[in-house]
Amino acid sequence: DKDIMKIYSEEKFVQEGLINTKKPKDIDPNNYHAIYYTGGHGVMWDFPDNKEIQEIARIIYENNGYILSVCHGVAGLFNIKDSEGNFLISGKRITGFTKAEEILAGKAKVVPFFNQKVAEERNALFQKKRFYKEFALKDGRIITRQNPFSVRAVAKLYLEERKTCKQF
Image (cartoon, rainbow, N blue to C red; front, top):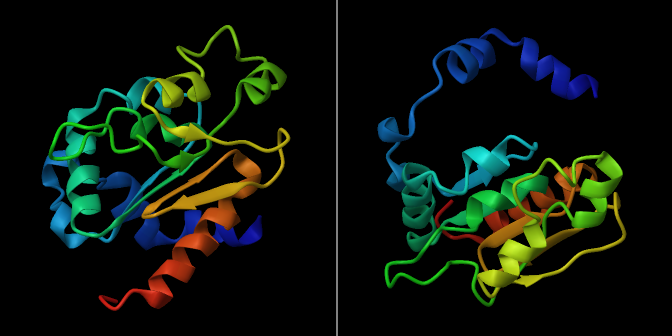
């Protein structure tokens, strides 16, 4: 997509977004209204046990902010706990990259877990549509999408929320 490639070539994005990326310890979650967990298979290893990012997400969420994820990014939500020690996704409708999509991508024997299985172990209500079709869910202030074809759907849901939010 030309619009995306244009952003990647902007000097400000390269300098501030790539070269000078902040570490989690440098982030004040009180300054954010949302956290967005990106996809890609690598996040299945990077996100689930990252306590610093979990704490950032918890604070944003408990400050009436939003948690968004795309595709494999849902793995970042699995171990976030609220102040009482309960899994944040427990009882919530969420989605993410499915087992069928892993099989079609040829990664079923490579990934450390299947998103639906882990989500259900946390008492989340994992929902899905036919593989590689646009699908996004909003349950309260958690917005998730199933696969790469749903990026715009998550953005639209979040932007609709921003319109109705009195803080912004």
